Image 1 (cartoon, rainbow, N blue to C red):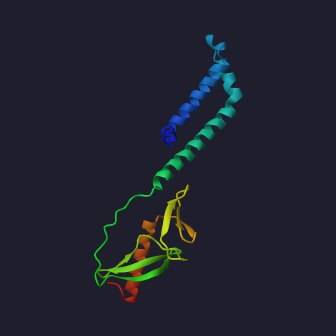
Image 2: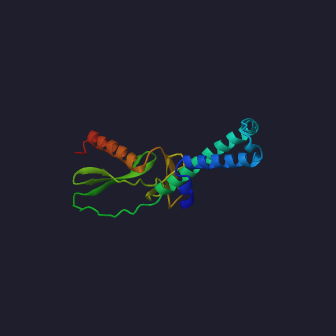
Image 3: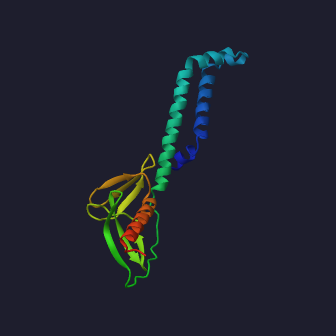
Length: 180
């Protein structure tokens, strides 16, 4: 993968490779005529092969885009090592709900020191296992359950949707008179 990353880290290198290949092809076909200074050779060469050259350029750009996207997704989807520092559990800290349903999944809601807190990882609606997040090719977020094969696509990340769920939960708790 390192060679692909080196070649396809920008659009400039594949286009340069393409132009080099076209120059070599042109020189190979017209090596005998190049001693004369005659530009009709170039005109005739490009009038014959312009469709093929344009198609090759287009294919080069598409392949470059796909390979760049795959490289970026592989980097984004690597699991990061996060160290758990934890929090101090008081007698006031407790789990309120573990089936708070928003955005087609469950969320665990806790009270910590009197404040409402929504866990960062959503839970599977079938088995309440934490959902894993992957970024798809088209920048959607796919959440999957490793226990029961439940999966759902979202437009936003777990962290951003969790912030929305936090706001909704706080509003609901204030309306019912349970929150601070």
